[in-house]
Image (cartoon, rainbow, N blue to C red; front, top):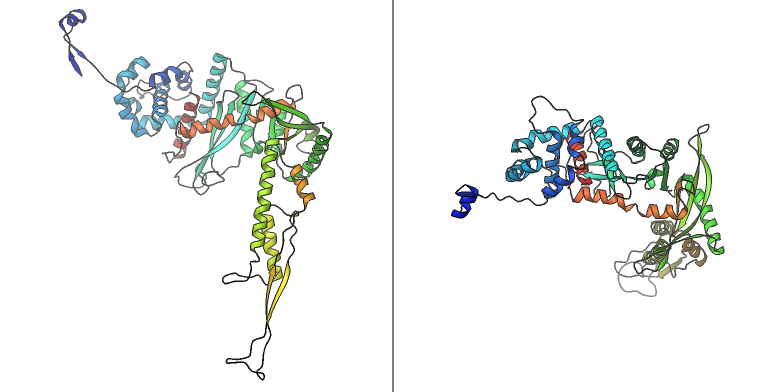
Length: 498
């Protein structure tokens, strides 16, 4: 817009009119001003190749401008960048101290950037330089690392060896997905290492290379690696202990742990009756101290295989009162549902009421209900056999004293009452709320109370996945090729750091 100036202003400025350019800035200046001190430009420029025919804008500045657009608009499509640059050209040029043109973020150039981010040697160097620079500049503590994985579904073509595969998912297991494995710095929640992998891979084997890469970048020992139940694999714990690091993860109620857990729970119940459990208190929102958890610990030697190096582990057996109350309420709900379904197996005679006449069929239906509601052994079911006899005349017509009769029987089973076994139910309630954690940290490094409080903060890494899926909108991925999928995933994890 051109504006005619007054004579006094013309005398001061030395020109007769003024050109006003209006651009929508949003938070772009703030985002770029935050990414430049974090070293995004220099860190990205070092490992990425720069062909001789490339434009004068570096890959670092291209990535920073694109990330600013993604964080502002929530759109990672390449097609939107040309119009975005054209509408903010006057703003971006002073911010970058160079002339920014729409061709600096063209479709081809952004595609090449994603392609160059995919090779492991380039991406791993970017991660190491970036988090080393951040930790050195901001002096973040780096003794607790959290690791976890998430899935990102999309409309990808499933092919052998490709990233987009169908696998276990909390969202939609019928859609192809990729798996994003991340290790983050606690308590900040800053990603330190990220892997974009096939969606069909299990989480168990993904922890070891990620932990080794983080430890190599931080160049230290004694890291406490915290993860969920999938990190409790014996090979993962052995690898962490061998590298002189520490781990903390919950144990599952399967395999040998399930057998040992029965003894641990019995010991815990006895110590609870004697008042010997260590109590963990925490102030609530009103400032009152409430019981968060209570428990005890046992120590055991462990090794990966016979003849291999052994290490000592502490098993922390913890009871949460809140979880115990929730599980007890769930048990009561399952008992009520089971009783209702069992009674419905033998309805009263009537039109449309199908009766079970075979005892084996009834027994199978009862077992199915008890197993589905997980109340085997606490609801004894007894039924009675009812027989209704009728003596109609043979053939049609009125009856008489000389007409033949036949006897017909209608048999049904009836469950008159569902009783509860108070003793077994009380035992189940006593075993509610218990959980076991395993760690190779000493009591001086990680006490029982500190371990419980540390694992309670596992939500911090979930916030990274929340930002990845909401703020930078990784799903759905508008790309098909594996190199573009992986490169875009890595680029968007850089945006999570901002």
